[in-house]
Length: 209
Image (cartoon, rainbow, N blue to C red):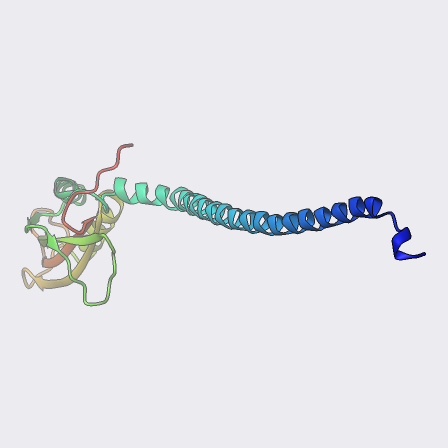
């Protein structure tokens, strides 16, 4: 076939269609790449948002688990007089009742002002502070067992937590008479601390129950 025999009108239409298809295809390919990049950026942003929300939810969920686990124990310490206000009146009344119950001839005490307690070992309480009320206890006992029974009653009846850091016992007389309930045979003198947990600035912890 010779060149002059070719129907250029037919080929011209096909050639134009081919060129248009190439141009449109290239545009679609370029546009597809841009769309894909935009979608990837949107996915990255939404995924970061989802991860942030999930992290907050997990943190709240973990906090709720911690509250359910430890709050009952916290309430026990609060109602037991260890966390919260100073239970000075309770300590005095418990000592008086114990003295009468045990028929201790003489029982005296002195409670000094409450202050921040500094233990001899490292103690990190975070936002909280351990406070101590120092008490001097003096009693005339019939025998050594009276002190042990007194402390047992404090353990079971008194609010709060205490610690004894010094005790001295001296005979009141040369003759020990355990039959007399009006006169003690042993003079007992003890130094003790009553502990209370408050906020670090001294604010009393209050719980609505």
